[in-house]
Image (cartoon, rainbow, N blue to C red; front, side, top):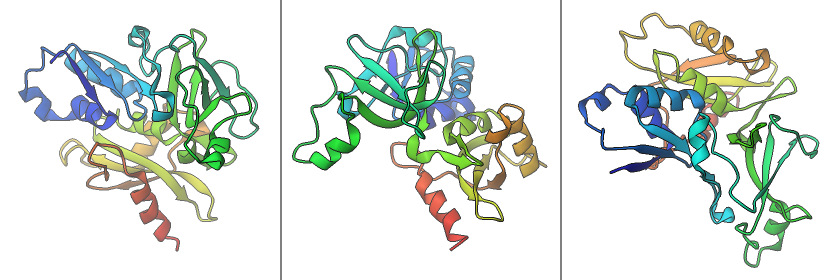
Length: 264
């Protein structure tokens, strides 16, 4: 097997789990991650451990399905590559609706021959996802850099609003999963004593020996060293496992419901 398509949770497994060392996967030349954003730190960890080329792809059914699938993706960790031919991208501010320049994060909108004509017999849905000039609103947050490489950060609906700033959970999870004592994590909307949103992390520790004495303050300090002040994790809760779907996607909503019930 030369090429293996995986989801980000499996990439995290390959980066950290000791069982991986018991298998010979030298015949594998490429790992292709899709289905959700994969942080550049996890991507680097997988490459460093396995010595296998890795890239990300991005698309959705409404895009038939791809807009970024290029060999150039090998050149920049965390990128899904450059746009395929005849495809246009706009990055739109979620607050103002204004188009943003390179390296600014906003909602990704695409236009091209592969974009669907629309949802059958559902004009209301079509109106909600298309702009007047037929760009498709993806609901995904990302940016394009000065070299034309596209990066997908998170979903619009997952963003946490902290003191007027938008915080992407996937970005914080990527940093958390880099900690040597952390094997998995999920960031959701927590609340402070005034009921305001803040980033809260559910964290799974690697094992009792490696993580002995690790506190929530240690975890928050680790993240703080790698992000802007407004992106810091403000609360931490240690759990045994992150709930996931059969395909490996984080079931963030389950943890969010548990958290919300604390304030019901």
